[in-house]
Amino acid sequence: MALLSMEKVSFSYDKKIDAVKNVSLTVDEGEYVAIIGHNGSGKSTLAKLFNGLCKPDSGEVVVDGFSCKDKKSLFEIRKRVGVVFQNPDNQMVASIVEDDIAFGPENLGVKREEIGERIQFALASVGMEEFRKSSPARLSGGQKQRIAIAGVLAIKPKILVLDESTAMLDPQGRKEVLEVVERLNKEQKTTLINITHYMDEVVRADKVYVVNDGEIVLSGTPKEIFAKRELLEECGLELPVSSKIAQKLIELGVNLPDGILTKEQLAEELCVLKQKI
Ligand SMILES: Nc1ncnc2c1ncn2[C@@H]1O[C@H](COP(=O)(O)OP(=O)(O)O)[C@@H](O)[C@H]1O
Ligand SMILES: [Mg+2]
Image (cartoon, rainbow, N blue to C red; front, side, top):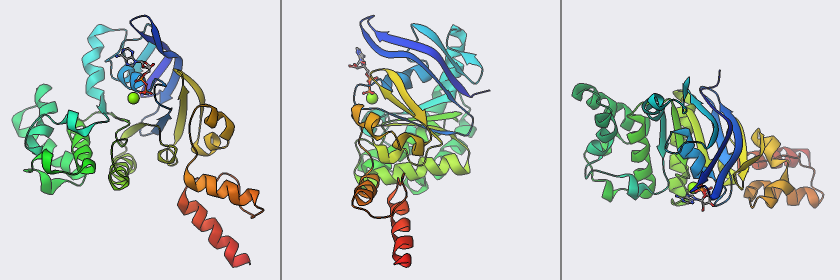
């Protein structure tokens, strides 16, 4: 059984703006799922439907056996789905890192002794132990988002959702955050949903959903998705630079395989080619 499933879910704001239309999707335990779509395509609304902040007009969201249709399940759903948002500054509530991380578990009524352990575990998970007593205001954007992730991890959610959590960061900050969450997925088997509009962030996901105008228009492995170049462009999405370069080289007659996604793959294929010459 899927850890999270959405079955024919529709949602509109004020019964006017159809933000999500008839969406069905599944996320398995331990899976790394990416959801990609341009601005206004309904991604944040999906994130809010995942953790019960929005209630479907029709259809059903089930998390770990708890249905959003059952009012009593909402608390259980929120405990299980932790969302990290876009702007790190809006997510900091305290003036010392450890107090900030304690906020979530305190609200859930976790005992004081255990909160200390959770802070330790959460900071270690994002590689920020040495900043326990620091002021969040003094951290870089990437470090702040890692603290925001630690704050969510301290709740011990089964599913970690990043809603464009790297969008406001510089390339170094984006890299830091992605490395942290991808390691959590690999090593701690944390189920990860990365919602983004950057194509290069989806290359390592197990499964990708492409959303456009509130609907899922495409799903599959990153390779399968990237093969549908024209459809992606129609959805306002750009291929990763390495894919574009590879495509251009193929057009110029260079003998490269189709479906190159990352710069590492491109470099490797170019080395193979060089050895043949
Ligand atoms: N609180 C809101 N009230 C009314 N309309 C909203 C609200 N939030 C989002 N929308 C609209 O819903 C659609 C989907 O928005 P959103 O889920 O935020 O997309 P994304 O996260 O992909 O940018 C857009 O048309 C947006 O303008
Ligand atoms: Mg959004």
